[in-house]
Length: 302
Ligand code: AMP
Image 1 (cartoon, rainbow, N blue to C red):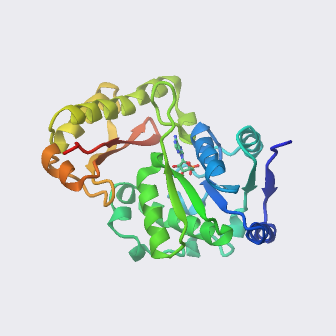
Image 2: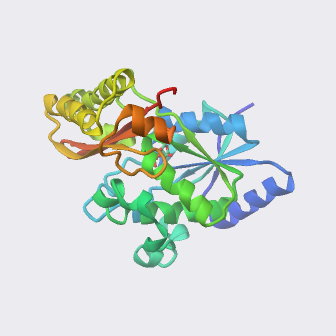
């Protein structure tokens, strides 16, 4: 049996496909992506294949989530290669719409999520560094949820804040979709897989390994002793500095749900209290390439 993906490129065809799944009583697992698929994306597809009857992968480089000075034009696009990569993983349907299909009236009036609908989860960290980014993300995800009517949707914990923002969108707009956050897939040396890793030179690629090394060091220190959040941040910053990664957007130790900074994290007090552990979020530039990563610090067992 060939697993060659069925490719849908227009909205009428998509509506028919969605109706057919519903008529057949099949659950749809949605995996939204911007393409240039790597093993991180494919792990989401595998989870979707395990947890739903049919898998719909969307491939769309969403212009509204890029600021004017970002890499929209340069962003890697490889639909043929993506279809081949998907073929080796699971039987999927691919929806790859045009920009006009998604934004019929053009880019600027297109966000249908108002900025005041996004609360603090969206306004700090990435929200602060990339103004408008989450408006673009929530707009496209809201449109995709509405158009594709999935029962389950899969997102990577690599974009941890995005996952939280989407969970919130799902609640606010009562999409009633089960949101699944999938583990971060890494290269052998620990660098989180990202389509943007392709921009790195060999030297920058080596430098970039300091991101996960710093996160790991901080996490294991936090697991072994009580530390202030600031100390953990310094551990990560030092490792970044040693690798000459000097443009740091943020290194933050945060509450896993609210993403509020845990300013003076005391393991016995705060982490035990919140019982959820903590997340260290990192965003840096290696050369001109912006990379993000994060690590989870589990709570101490009382
Ligand atoms: P993107 O194509 O970058 O928009 O990513 C599409 C989805 O894949 C998002 O939910 C990402 O969080 C997820 N993703 C990207 N890279 C990874 C990774 N290294 N591990 C797990 N999920 C990932």
